[in-house]
Image 1: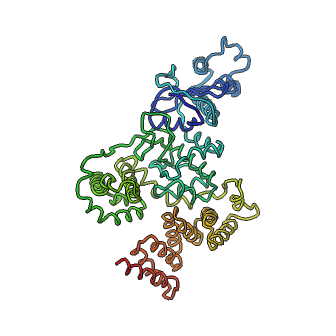
Image 2: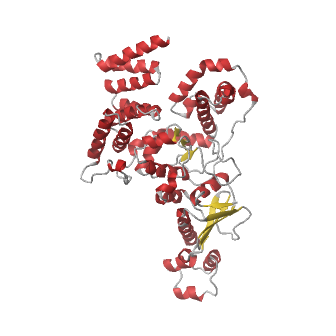
Image 3: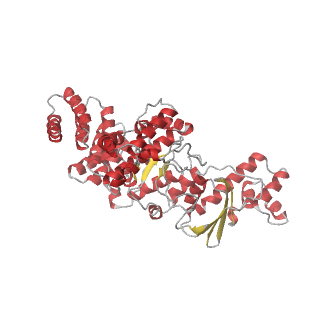
Length: 516
C-alpha cells in the first residue's frame, strides 16, 4: 500500500494505523530525506531517519554519553539500535537512560515528517523490527503539536464535508487544553455538524479547523469522515469504528448489535404516528442516557432492551419509502445518535469514562484558560484583536457590546463571533451567554445549539424573567410548546407585567389554537 502525503499526511496515517491495529513498516520520503516508522498492533515501537542530526550517535554526543573520540573509535557507523545495545551492554547506558533516550529520539524523528505536506509513503505489513528493543510512545501530544504547526490552508483541505458530524470521544481523559480547544469541547455535549461547530467556535474558520483537526487526530473528538488510506475497513468512519484513544492506543468497540429482520417488524404507520415526538425527544436529549431513554443507573440488559425497542420502531430501514427526503435524513441522523449511545453504554469501560465526562463537560467552559487567543489574520478576525491595555473582563465586555450591536443590526455571523468570544472569556456572565444563545437561534444552522446557552444564563440568574422569556421564545420557534409554557409561567411569576413575556404567551396561545 502506498500513496502521497498530500492526500494522507503522516498524522492521519498514524491515527488510522492505530485505529485499525495494523503492524508493519511505514516508509516516508521527501526529496532526499527518508523516515521509517515501525508499528505493532497499531502502536509505534520505533522510528529512524537518514538525517544526520536525527541519528542516535549525534544524540549520544549531544548528551555527553560518549565523546567525539569514542564515537570516532567505533569501527563502523552502526545502526542506531545496534549502537545503543552495544553501549548498554558495555555499561555506558542504564536501562532507564536507554529507554528515555530512545523515546526522545523517536519523538524528534517523527516531528519532522509530521510536518511534510508533500512526498510519498509506503506501508509494508510484512516488515517487522528485527530487534527486541521497543519504545513506549504516546503519540497524542505529537499529533496535537503537528496540527498546531501544519499550514492552515492544508488543514482546511482535510475537511471536505461541512455536514459531517463531530462528536466527543467516549474516552475523555484529562488533558491540558488551550482556550479554543476547551471551548469547542464544551460545545460537544451532543454530536454536531462541522459547519455548526465552526460557527459557534468564536474563531476564524481556518483556526477552528486547526483546533478540531488536532482534537480529532489525538482522539478527543471523533470525525464522521476521514480520508482513509487503508481498505481494511470502509472509508467512512462510522460511530462504531474503533478510534485512536487519547492515550494513543487502539480501542475496540464491544457488543455492537447486528442488523436483523426484527428491526423491520411491526407496522410503519404505528411508528409514523409517534415519529414527531421521537425526533423532538432526541433533539432535546443532552446525554446518551436520554438518547436511549434509560436512567443513569440502568443495567446492561435494560439498555439492550431499550435499544432494540427503538430499533424495531425507528430504524431508518423501516422508512425506506421516504428515502431521499428531509424526514428520512432526520431519522437516520437520530438513529446514528442512538447507535453511538448504545455502543458507549453497553461497554463497561467506555461507559465509566463517559459518566466521568458528563460531569467534566459542564465545567469545560468555566475552566477554559483565558490567556490563549488565536492570532487574527483577516479583516473579520481583526475585530477580535486582543487589546493588551485591557483586562480580560474589559475585553469580554467590548466583544459583548460589538456582538450585541451586530445582533441588533441583523449581522448574525458577526454577532455569533463576538458573543462567542465574550462567553469564552467570561463564561459566568449570564448576559453574555443569553445573547450568544439568541444569536445562535437567529441562524438556521446553529439554532438547535442555542438552547444550552440560554439555559446556562437561566441557571446563572434563575430570578431573571428576561432570560426565561428568551428561552420561551426559542421553544416557541422550535415548536416545543409545553416547554415554552413552563418558562413563560416562571417568567410571569417573577414579573407579572413583563410585556415581552405576555406577548410571547399570546403568540403561543394563538399557535396552539391553529394547530389544535
